[in-house]
Length: 378
Image (cartoon, rainbow, N blue to C red):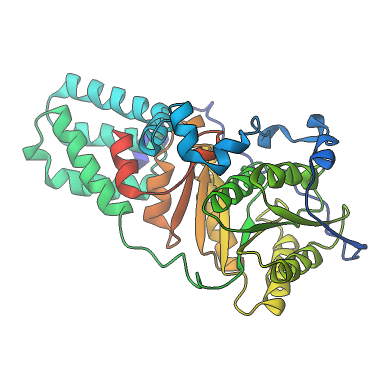
């Protein structure tokens, strides 16, 4: 059935292209500057220098970050589930509308209906393998499914069975202090923004956070990260542009030990997964922090863009081969009707999906919950 779908695909569908390669890393190590961000320093940064794909939303109120209970009293906030449901609106509308249309035309789940349903799931970016796995299970229940609500219930049950499997412990070495998290991913996926939101989350929970600005090659990357650090109330360690990223990461870990930080978030350049030498640069960063703290980094988090669909899967596989990933973060779910990529990732990879991004606000980066996701999807 999947082969028939591929034959019917329109010629004008365009594949998501990989970002252009970056310049070779410079092995020189300029003089080090370790500073905590200041308001005066942040105000000097030009907004024009920030990249379009990682534009920073307006700064949250300091009182909101320090006392969320007060913020809830002053300004009603949507619950986490409602934020997730709102973020999945495009995917939910796409799936539900087509499922209802499918049932209104056929009224029963025969072979032709199941084939159309499989095509629908593939179009929502669940992937061929995942769609076929789901159809195999739905086909066994076809005789008992008589309504569109019954079909939705069956899909919820089977999707939850696929993505709700127990995963590896992503909080390994949680007792380590500081806990070192290395964040990787190609350009444009929202990596720097994700680091800023994670820093704000840890700060709200009473942890002292230090950010390492080890993306020394992308224009304005350090300045952008400094703005996020200031907003999150985190320290930042940075060198000059074009400095050795491994040296930045090493100095950040050293500073974290000296300052008593609880969490270190290491930003890295948008390495193209097709460039072996760039992967080697990431391995070098990994080795550098391991020299200062045994078993560090304690977590390697890959950030993926949901709008790239199945291309995200190939990125995850290649990054995992090079770095042995511990967890994934999937951003921009609110900007696509193909949120089924979450199901495909969870079903295809042995890497836990830890965070999902469903909006631009700090609260819109959520810890992934399989049951909540499935409920929000239908």
